[in-house]
Each structure stands twice: as structure tokens, then as C-alpha cells.
Image 1: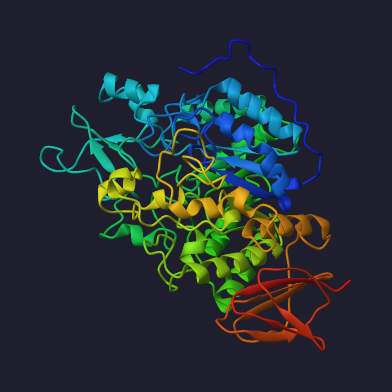
Image 2 (image 1 turned 180 degrees about the horizontal axis):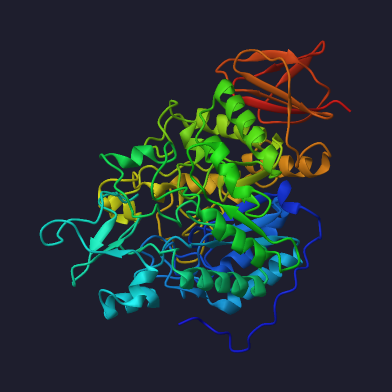
Length: 553
């Protein structure tokens, strides 16, 4: 049952600065609540913990905070299995805590974006429990994808679809029918052809908009609508096609009507509320379909996230992204890490071509150097950028977690995603010492490495050259430089092989992705650099894996 505050709060008033089209150049910080800050010492982060650390985020210089799910959930997939979309899970607090967090954020000039999970619910959602209880043929089952099985006695799944987490995408229930779950069996997929599903989610949108949230990040935004008849895909190893090919359960054209209806709801509210799509599509051109003027505002750029630290490859994806977004008038987005992929400080520490889930630590020094350079490149590009908690500290992925502490459901299914996402979800360090390095007073739900203390916010604050101060400086310069932020183009400059150089008005960015130092023109006054460089006689010598910002003014 949804929670109701003892005294229901009036709709929160958005007091953040009224900057028009703020989302076109916003830097949005992702908070994974269970791993950000623990206020009550139970080892699990919570909303009050997030609220207590909002001043840190304001001082970091971000514009908005995206909160991963905190809804009531059995936590089969870290909250992405929602049992009640209008309640806060007790491990994170309650609705009054959410209300206080939103209000405090607004008072600090921060906006709040919450995760929304519309592709599937928890198997503990009241709708699904009712569907199981009422049996085959009941109207309640039409809200999900229940089907009879194939085979002589219905013993085979209705089609050959595979779960993203491994194994078949179907589970059989006691009465013989099967239900669809593209993820874990505890996450049954909604049937978006049923009008009650659309009605319910438009109501959920209004509930949180009335609470004062500034937007929604839409989980699996590409997955709501399935191809008519649920046709077989054919063949095994289907997951290798994800993000590379047309799938009957992903990126179907019918999803766009859902988002056009949602946009009508959002536009009823003042304050420029936004939608952000998590949409894995075969091409960035397909991604652009989600951000047409009457649909969503932003879509994550997974093509950029998946690109290796290589100048030629990066230029290709940058050009394609800007070209795809320009016709629909949407801002490009840029992201290097999130809660589902290996942190980029570890990805870049390893050889290229290993993908976004990597199990080896690689060369830590190399990875951090590249990560710092990649951050300055990302923040110099036109559009909006996303920062995942802890990346501003240069945190690596924790690749050596003991098997017995892992909680990623994909790990236990033995196929599908690699199941090593826990490594990027280890609670972040705030202080040099303490049972959980300042995360809380009672340890942490995943063990933290001994190296965490010297990577903590306390250890890096005020230290010239630290990764934290690099981020703070970059976000400050980004705000101060009129030519940074929103835009839809860059002017590429001649540069040595392995180097990206571009101009935006009086601003110039040069990124050396090669493994060797290079000499480039000195374009003016250095604003910021990810590593040390030397300048003489109108030239600059950039070390390997270094990005520099100049102003020609």
C-alpha cells in the first residue's frame, strides 16, 4: 500500500533558479542511494543521508541530482523491481524524507530527477499478485504478458526470447501459464497495450510532480512496447545483438506514443520539468527518435560511453551524435560511467575492446590519467553531461569483491550480463578513516577497499591536482565560459594523429589520447589541464593521455 504522510505536504514549490532550458547544458549527478551516505548506521545508504550531503553536491558545481530507485521493493534488483511506485522503501526512509530532500535541494539551487521503472514491476506488486491469484483468462493477467506454453503439455516457453540477466525470458507459474520478464523472474513485464497500464503511470507521474520533482529518468525506455504477436527472435546468444540490431522487444516504434502522452502530462507543470531516456538503440539516429520536440528531453548517449579512448573513434561518435540531435533540436548528452558499467577509471586502465563490464584492475595509474583527460573532454562538448557518484574522486571499480558478498542478480543466473555490477556500487568514501570511511557509522553493505581512505573527499579536498579539485575546477570554468555548455556543433582543428582539437567560440579543447607526448599550438591562456604541460615559443607539449582547455580571449 502506498505511504501517506501523516500530514500530506502541499505540492513543493520549485525555488531553484529559473534558467530557461536549463537541461540543455546541465551537469547531472547520479546518486545511487544505497551507496552514497548512510544516516542511521545500518550499512545502507538512505534519503536522509543524501539530504545531509546536498551541500557537497552544490559546492561540487552540479545542476541536478538523479536518484536511482528508492521505491518500496523486495530489492531483487537493487530497487529496479518496484512493488509500490508511490511509497519509499523503509530501508531508504519514507515520503516525508523524500519531501524534505526535494525541498532542501531546491533551496540549495539543485534540481531533483527521480528514476521511473515502467517496463516491469516487482512480482510483489499488487497487480501481479492479483493476476496470479485470479488465474488464466482473468482481466488482471492482461496487464502483464501471460501466455500458454508451447509443446505437447505447454512445457516450453511461449517464444525463444532470452532474459537480459540470462536464461529464458519466461517463467512458468503453478497453473501452467508463463509470464514474460526481460530481466529477473521477479520483474514481470507490463503489457503496455493495456490502457490501465498507461493510466496508472500517468497518475504516478502526477504524484511525484506534485511532490516537486524536476524530472524523471526512464529506465529501459526502449522496452515498453513489444512486437505484435511476440515473435521468435531466432538463434542463441541473443544478448550479443543488444544495442546493435533490431529486437522484437526493444526500440519498437509504439513506445513513442507512450512518451507523447507523458509529455502532455509533464507540460502541465511549471518549472521546466524533464524526461531522460535510458534507451539502448542500434544507432544514435534511433536514439534521436526519443527526443523529438513532443517526446522526451534527453537520452543517454550509450554509444559515447562505449567508445574506447581513441581520438578517431571518439570524433566519429561525437560527430554522429551532434548530427543526429540537430534535426530534432535536442541536446546531446555525454556520460562515462553509471551504476551498470565498470567505472571508466578501470575501463581505461585495460586494453581497448573489452566492453563496458571488465573484471581486471588493469594499470591504475594509466586508467586514472585517461579518466581525468576523458572527463575534461566530455565536459567541453556541447550539451548536457552526467557524472556518476565517486567518479569525481577517481574511484576505480572494485574488481575483487568476494563471491559471497555479491548481490547483482545477473551474477547468480550464470549468463546474460556479466553480473559484476557490484564493483561500481561500492559505497563511496567521505573521510580518511572510520568503519566505512564516513559513509556511515555501521559499516557498509559492500566491503570497501583499504585504499578508499586516501581517495576520500576529505583526503582530496583542497589538494591541488587532486581529481576532486579537477572536477570542481572544470565545473566552475564550464559555468564561467560563455562558449561552453549548450550548443550543437564544434569546429574541428588540425591536430596530430591521436589528438582531438576543437574550438567553440573563444574556447579551445585539445585531448591527447595517444600514448606519447605531442606538440600542438598554444591557443592562448590555459584554463585547466588534466596533467602537467609545458609551453614555449607559441607551442605546448602535452603529455600522453592529457586534455587541456584554453581561452583565446
